[in-house]
Length: 319
Image (cartoon, rainbow, N blue to C red; front, side):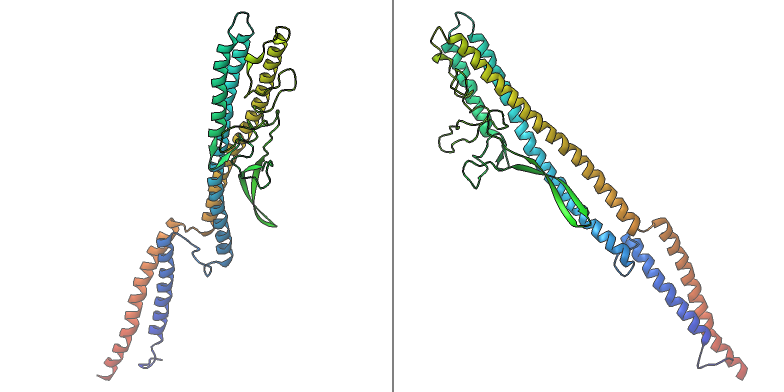
């Protein structure tokens, strides 16, 4: 039946044109944004997963920054400890020189005094972001006087079935003679260290001084001077052993941080890749689809034009 009131062909062509227009809008949105799933209405499941993964990736970025900060703290402490080891080696060499007959111990002690001042300078200077890992508590602001807070650096970010958490690596400060601090504390007003830490702890043999306060000019008794010099060497050697152990601990933490930084970088790339697989648009496919829709749109417009012109044909029946 042909009707001038109801044009079924035009209605069908118009519906097709609308459908093609809607598809073109979706395709153009994918082409312009580069995303196949840009909002929850596109695919709620993939959108929620991608949103969570993006938030985790932002957290990983913050972890990477924290790792860099922690690495700087470790590197500062390690550099200070390594420099202190070199200075204590020099003190050891001076003590060996002083054991020789005829050597002026006063002149040797003058050199040792300068080296001891350098040790204090190193301990005071090895601070980064307000933290000094070579001094027990003077710069840490311990809540309890004499207490040493554990130093720590961020080492990871974990999401599991219980939620999310940040992992840290602890470095407990130890103020004993065999610990990992050069001095237990340094008086902020006078700059004088206390009698704790590797360099501040007093010896237990015939030498009742620490590496920092060692004064060989007090070894005046001919009967005991040889023993005192030997004990002084032992004191310095023990300090070197403790400092080497502390440096090794710092180095191992530094190595772990380096490995963690590499892992975080790789993990972040993997998350980005996973998000892309879920929500990114295939631009080759979208460009092909857009071209096809443009052709379909032209055909639909032509079809609608033909359907609309069919009413004009009816006029010929009444001529």
